[in-house]
Length: 422
Image (cartoon, rainbow, N blue to C red; front, side, top):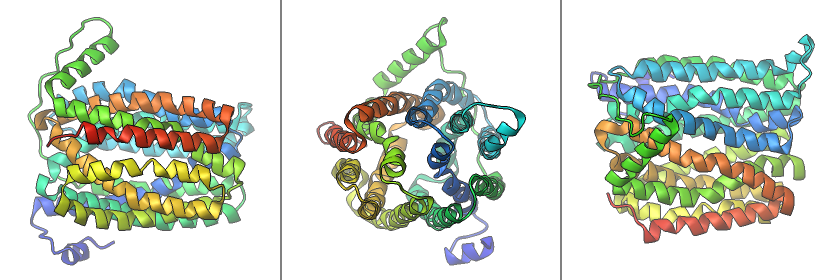
């Protein structure tokens, strides 16, 4: 991708720092999405190497536990740094380099490691989620710092369209590659290729100009003893002082419980019960990301005219339809259409929710509040997948998906009777 041509295409001014930042952030996500497309096959890779259902539940839940542990300390740490960008960038590099370890797992049996390779893949993926969680805490405030508020929706939409277009192409190509080549070398080559592409993403992130901010003093801990008690007290303090932050956080929890319960069940349902091939997994990924592109373009236009709070209230209840329809339609061809529906609907929620969340955070304390929000939400995302797998083992994958979708719809109504005011 030629950056000067991109400037002309988008009618941007190369002399403007904001325009240069926007271009670099759009270009970097193109290369990042290649590794993201490879990572979309993580669950299938673990299953094909022998992972159990419980391992997939842990793969979904344990990264959320690490987020709970890491998020608030990371937010407090970054808030005390004037130059946050190096910490954010290098934590991302550590996470991405971990995919080289994922690719090496099948070789471990050659040196006498007798552990289940599928379980080992899950362990590595969980461990490398730690630097990813640190990165996430710094990334949202970094975007807010380098892109003016009036341009965030446009930049965020451009990034997501680029990411989804790239993912749409590569997840299909990777699916075809995986179906035609010998296992596990097919997965190993894919992960190495994805990592190499991500290095170009790192290069363009380094080019983003992030203004230095005066470091704030460390947030006072309410407890000098147990650090987890101190974090809990900090959360309570933030929820008391910022009622709209408290409102969107509580509503998001009620909306998300059903979705988190369902999250580890899809790959189990597709591979174990419906015998989905890697090619089909690639196809449904392509349908999802292609539909998401149209969703981002359409909902960005609608939100600009209707407003974020109204769209969030109207659309968030529809997300629970996806697990319901997947559970009711035990046919891979029909499920592809459901996946496409999800791609069209989800951007309405993601775009409106993200912008509202930024608005209800105190601007000078965004790293800390991002850490607080991530900690609270990931408590649910940690517990629910384990419960979801347990319930599915008792009642079946399809009935569990239907029940969890209905629970998400019920919880999403909280945005109606407890609207967030911005």
